Amino acid sequence: MAENNLTEKELADFFKKIRFGKKDVEFLLENREKISATQKTETPAGTSRSGSRNVTRKKMTMLRKRLSERLVSVKNETAMLTTFNEVNMTPIMEIRKKYKEVFKDHHGVGLGFMSFFTKAVTEAMAYFPQVNSQIDGDEIVTFDYVDISIAVSAPKGLVVPVIRNAEMMSLAEIENAIKELAIKARENRISLEEMQGGTFTITNGGVFGSMLSTPIINPPQSAILGMHNIVQRPIAVNGKVEIHPMMYVALSYDHRIIDGRESVGFLVKVKEMLEQPEKMLFGGKDPVEKLLGI
Image 1 (spheres, rainbow, N blue to C red):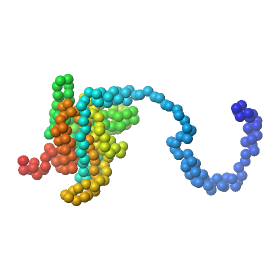
Image 2 (spheres, helix red, strand yellow; image 1 turned 180 degrees about the vertical axis):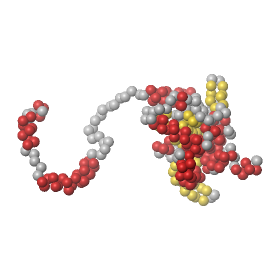
Image 3 (cartoon, helix red, strand yellow; image 1 turned 30 degrees about the vertical axis):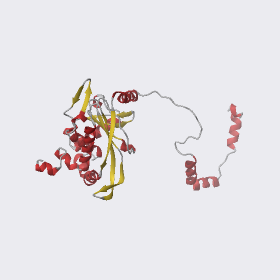
Image 4 (tube, rainbow, N blue to C red; image 1 turned 135 degrees about the vertical axis):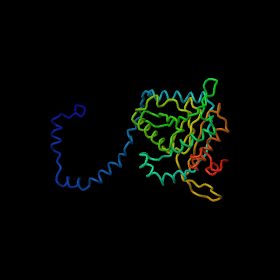
């Protein structure tokens, strides 16, 4: 009060002089929507007009610090390359459109894209086991099981819980496992044990709108598959231009143990099974070829 050079008595006298008449109240009631809209327009939410040049500092969380150390070590200690391809998502989207309600009623969980990708990856591993391998000292360790690490965004940062023996699971089992891990991640209930021991990672930047990226390997693994957003694009089908929902996919891999032939062949195999989902039932083979035993 002293800064304004007004005493409490002077302020009290000032406010006593302020009176709202009946017409003032009626005007406010009649125009409150306009006044409210004007206030919202003049002061957009989240917009600062103070001209401040303040800088905020906060200490990195242990999770973020550990993650940054691991990412830098990957760049320094691996010969990482990335190969790309694109997938026509029409068959999978048609399956989801036709069966999503029945699937949810029967299994109690939604039918997403991640289960199809996980299943395709586990089937492709049988043809390209090098992708499911790791370097341990001067040895190459190849696993006869597939533990898929699924990158999940959590309140404290990115976490990568593991689905154990994904090669043995059905689509419904994979979806239930993903749902359970995602809930735990959002509630910060993921344990260290649940994030250790993966042999391959899948990350989906498409949920954030990413069109294309080069995912970084999750050590000590040797490869990671990156999914991206689905965009309607013109493609050539049997000599004709058609519009289809397309997704770019990226496979980053450690070139020390995975050669170009394995990396490209693996990604092509994944693409084939996503575009012909029935192949997932026959070990990645064409159903007719399986029937004929060729």
